[in-house]
Amino acid sequence: MSSTITPEESLVAFKRNLTSKGRYDANLHDDYLLYRFLRARKYNLEKAELMFTNYLDWRIKDNVDDIVNSFSFEEESKVHALYPRYYHKTDKIGRTVYVEQLKSLDVGELFKSTTTERLTKKHIREFEKFSKYRIVACGLKAGVHLEQGLSIMDLKGVPLSQFNQVRKVIQLLSSIAADYYPETLGKMFLINCPTLFTAVWAVIKSFLDETTVAKISILGSNYKKQLLEHIAEENLPASLGGKCECPGGCENSDIGPWNDGTVAGYPDKLYEGFKARDSGYFF
Image (cartoon, rainbow, N blue to C red):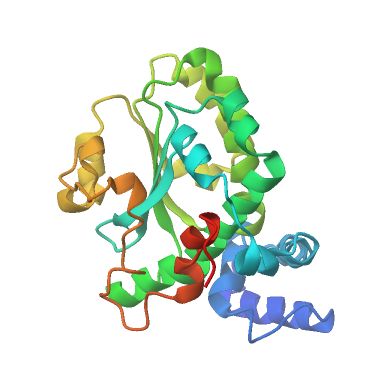
């Protein structure tokens, strides 16, 4: 971005360019969304426009609205046992806390239970739920606009020999965030990283932009202090060094401002119905 052009002026130009090509809808594309694409391309209007139009085309091609409204992931219980991924409460800023645990991830077994296409759809559905539901509720509770979350990726128990296969799965899913949900990562902690992980990280970060890399902290087994600087002890699962022990397990609770009754207008039947839909129950 030129030093003589402000972000606000870039936004006006961005809207004008998109409008001239019939790609801007004020009812669907608020300023926060457009700013995320501008920031992701460092306010280069041509690159931001290309990224945004690719996003719009992708939503149509992959039927994203249909995924939200009707996609069922019936294999969720099997996949969750192999690859636990879950949202759990908020950090000290009020952002969502998202956890991935990789110790049980056997890629061969994973794709006996699902397919790349279906796993991708599940991931898209969760990103839609994050960006249009979870983080919105978090912002309402915090009293500020929020659009980024905090993520924890736990590498405890992952054999170094499996890192390449695990990396491929993570890379596949991460590309969705990078291409279509930019600027939604606020902070990430990679914890329980083995000593030799440095070599693996060198490969992984080559697929990430420098802004994203700067948000990621690589930690060994002594990670508790750093996590607690960002997350209150009562909000951090006991399995990660905190004090929270949700009935049925924190990894199954999906608890936060979006459904805990602390924000007016929440929970929402559509988004909270995903679990029932995956279980074969429709309402």
